[in-house]
Image (cartoon, rainbow, N blue to C red; front, side):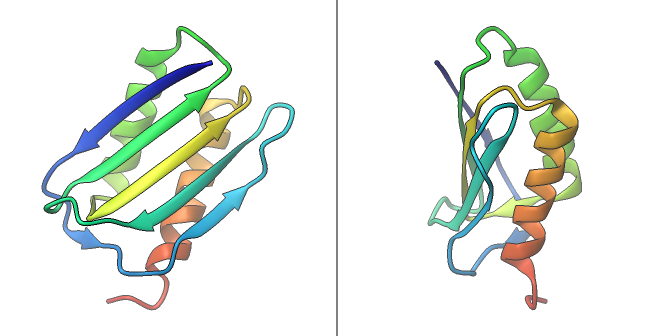
Length: 104
């Protein structure tokens, strides 16, 4: 297992929702937990993955996610069992939409 941590500063979409969980850890999939956290406007993402050595790909996927969803005061935890980048992006989008639903 490998643990990767990313932090993005100066988000402008504050998450105030209850924690949300999307996806299921299983063969080739992942789960995403998104929750509010006092991070001075930042978004922190921790990834625990069985696919060791793909840090650059994870960085690219997280950069793309942050460009779409500039979250603030949000902690995201990802448990991965080898999901493709497309599945990771889909689950992250689902989590962000779920967390921000009904917020202006």
